[in-house]
Each structure stands twice: as structure tokens, then as C-alpha cells.
Length: 212
Image (cartoon, rainbow, N blue to C red):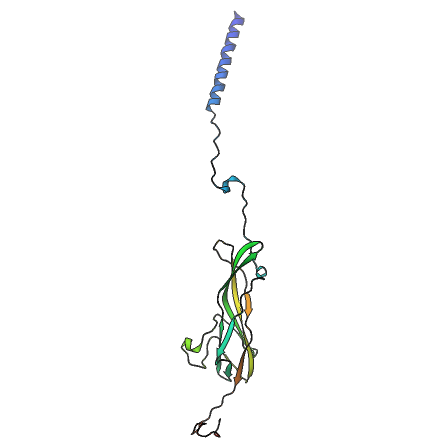
């Protein structure tokens, strides 16, 4: 009788254990299905590419056009009076490749250095403007004019300081430190002395008069 009672108690314990195990399995949530991905970004088979930092050395194959230079009076100056010099330069863009990337390079005039040919230079933020456009009388000072003290012929030049920037196709311009320089050809200014005198008759009326 004791053996039978012990056997019956063991059977009931086994059934209770199996019941608890089945309940535990039923209570464990099923693993969540992975979210569906419609783009390549979340599939893990892409690479992030960053554009390179560009220096002036990388722009060696991109050369802005040389500026133009003219003056007033055209090709002539007068000792002791301002000679007006006017440069011409504009924004330029060109396409190419830098470090295996397609790129557009932009050059924007940021400064002008005038070399007047007599040892004098001037840096200006403007390219200069004609007397008439500035609303000034001839032989008056401008931001880019120069007064010569001796007669002679002077080769004048202007160097444009271009501020470069690059766009790798995103529409965002990334500035490049420094300037790219472009220098004009020589513009000769013949400087002369002018003497005045009070006369009672013109040179047509008196060809041998002073200054005729």
C-alpha cells in the first residue's frame, strides 16, 4: 500500500511539471518579424562616401581667364594728374574632376592688385570705374587711379584675386582657403608733361606762339 501511494504521488507531480512547461512555452512571445525595407540604405549593402577637402593645389588644372585692363585717358597720362585705371573681371565656373570626383569650380573676384609700372602698387576691392560712370570730372582721383611724377612709358598690370569654391553636385558651394591669381597683360601708359601759358591768340592765329 505504501508503495502504491508513493507511485501515485509521483505520477501527479509529473503531470503538474509538464503543465507548467507547456504554460511557459505558451507565454513566451514569438520573435518579431524584421521590418520590411524599401530602400538600399537599410539593407546593409551600401557605403557612405564623403567628399574630399580641397586645397589650392588640387585646383592647379583649373585656371581663370586673365583680366582686361584699360585706362583714362586711353594709353596716356599727365605728370602730376591722376591717370584712371579700370580692370574687368567676372565670376567664372568650370567643370572637371578632383580626386576622382566630378566637380564644378567657381572663381569669384575678391580683390584687385594694381601694379602701376613705376614701383607703386595698390590693392583695391573694386575693379575701378570710368570717370563718366562715377559722375566725376576727368583727371580726378578714383579708387584705382595713380599719379605719375615723371614722364615716360609705364607697363601697367592688374592681378585679380579669385576666391575659389567647389560644388560636388549637391548644390552646396564649399569654399577653398586662399586665392587663385590671374594677371593681365601689360597695358602701356605714356605719361607726358603738360605746360600751360596765357596767350592772346590761338595757335591757328599765331602758329609761332608759346606752346604751338
